[in-house]
Length: 204
Image 1: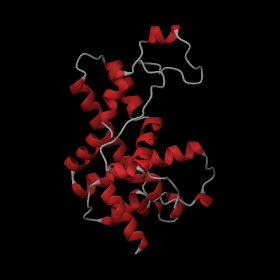
Image 2: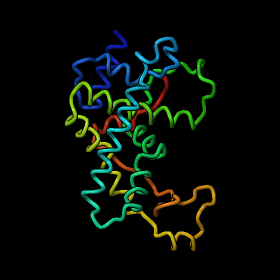
Image 3: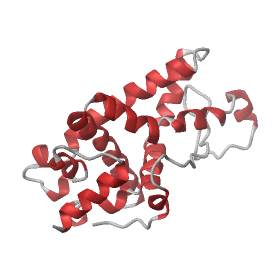
């Protein structure tokens, strides 16, 4: 019953009611929880699907909204938007940590980098699960209200490469090989119930 209540809570957070709630549970389940049945029960393959769907939506959005950008500029913007750094931040804003099922004892390493990777994985897996359960339009709508707003946000903060080289950039955060961004601020408000945006994150 507690597991079911958590899934219902997550559905409310995502503003989506799943037809097959087992897909939702799978989307938040790390393979450390089910090493023997990971292909069937973990989010790995849903993440694979969600990553491709997300990339397609982001690319189309950039193509339609930045028609004067070159291929290289579009590539750099897309790479930044779907980066682990940006997606993990969005996942934190949504509040996905409290729904993630992970057995830390079965992981080789667990640190801040692991937390970012897990949050990114779950966000992509949820996109895949929504696509399978609700259809492509529902997946597009979810991406449109939670991730696409960051595209313009990042683009507005782009720094021309020549100007960036002349500035005192942090050597630990170099500009992409192709593009204009030098660790822009990705603080944003996603279109979800405000009560969830200030919740405390924890692992279950």
